Length: 480
Image 1 (cartoon, one colour):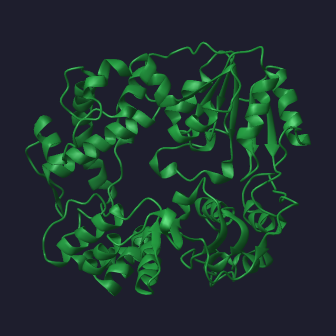
Image 2 (tube, rainbow, N blue to C red):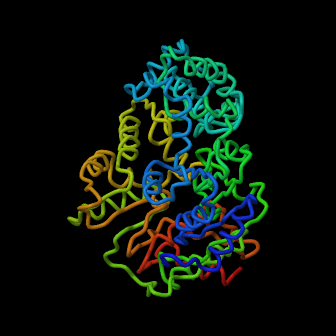
Image 3 (cartoon, helix red, strand yellow):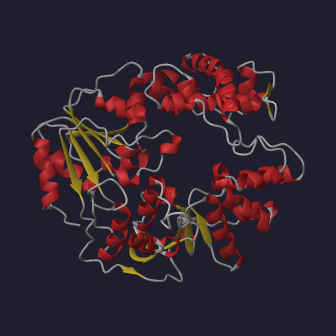
């Protein structure tokens, strides 16, 4: 990537920033958005600027390289400086089991939904999750819209849970905002408390990074500032809608929208593959590859990374390679899969489970049947994993994982690979090809979330991409 001289696209962004207008910058995979923001910051040396980083690691890296006129903070860092200290004594406390939260909220009775009875500890867990979703939102009050949908329940049962939980969630929030509260206090809590004060930030310019995955709270916070706003991200990499994130880029009230399309991560072969997926989205963005990188699309017998669509398939890939004596790392670790396998173990033994994904089921057969339904398809790879290997073997495999620095191969879901890159990448076979409609003979439409996940996955490769489970895209585009 050029060290000092801006590209044509970067110069356009710098010139637009100098005018003081509010900007949206759509930055494709590997196009150097952080470097561009540094250039913008140097061009605005006479103004005070705030760079709102997505996480602490990004903030630490940016803090060491941005010019002196820029303050680098995460949203949580800003909030902690303002109000977090008032709750310092409640932060980083011990884990609080759902059973204890139920006691503190005085939740003693089971909720009878006819086909299933919900235990107080599960109701308490849903209550705390409701508070969490409220904290992600820009809403002022907790309502039924914040109650998470529970897998395996119908609409009436979900409505009944929401009606039951909301009063307890409001009670929980009252405890949380109290300096003497007893429920576990999280970092998202002081961020919400601060945002509710409608703070005005003392900066001429506010730059928000990874805007496509900002939650509504942070997006609204930045949009309410009187200074110039520069929102940066890639709408095609919006992967976290399921946990409350919104793509604020598409609706941001900007005066001008600009693009970064020159990728420095990979060569033209990978850029061409990424553009196939971008062509299926409502975006004019198309990537150009780094001319100094001779990236290839070819079979990767020993890739640096294997990217999967689901956790179940990722664990299956882990077990296959462990059995072959390969040292394997799993991005994010095996904790989540282990807990699911423990829940499966309970259900197979005729015991109830309180796992958030499986608590409504009383037998493993019910889980198997549900995974065949459209609403349960995301569980199918996990069910297949358990049925093929058994929960004991899956649990044992999670305890044999290797640190990435010593691993022969890194395995990840596409979601957890976001922000990462490897020399060679293999796409696993669980990115399902859309079915043909028997009446029209045409392919079913690919959900936008799946398109974005495919785009993110293929753009993790720098030198070698084995498209594997996504190689059907050529046939799909030819038929379109």
